[in-house]
Length: 220
Image 1 (cartoon, rainbow, N blue to C red):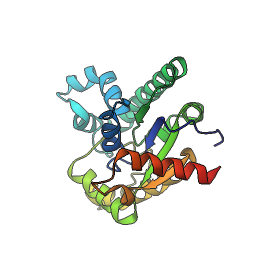
Image 2 (image 1 turned 90 degrees about the vertical axis):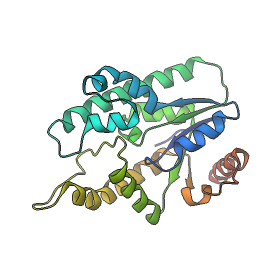
Image 3 (image 1 turned 60 degrees about the vertical axis):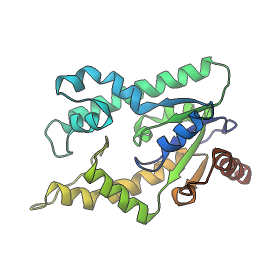
């Protein structure tokens, strides 16, 4: 996927749920950056459908989507992706119209499914940073999904076996989903930061941005 990154004062953070996208978005926002959360905007678009089922918030979106073996899951997965495509399109159109200012975009884990046209626009307008989890951290992501589900688009990766419980299927299939997404995130991103390197609570935004600059310069 070709295109040159913008200077890193317009960042798009990508990666699986739990990798730290929202954490770093909030840190940058606390220092004056404009912050946009795709999760929040999608939730707003789904609000009436969530309310009809008594749901609200990001966990409510996950509850509305349902477990991937639910008979309504495929239909709602498609609805969610449609709203995500609209959301990303609106964000990018706004960026293309506005003068440049420090901005960070907190994408969803499923941003890679929004289509090549939008993803190429994203790469042209922003510096895409992939927050990559190690194998050990990926196991934590699986456990977190099981204990505190966030919206996940499985895109056919949930494949139950006979006699297997849904929890067992998730534990077996989630690594496959992670591996497939990892390739897509790497192809989309201008640089990759390991989540383990960012866990230090003393790490400030200046050091975070320096890591991004350094990787981009090495890649030129």
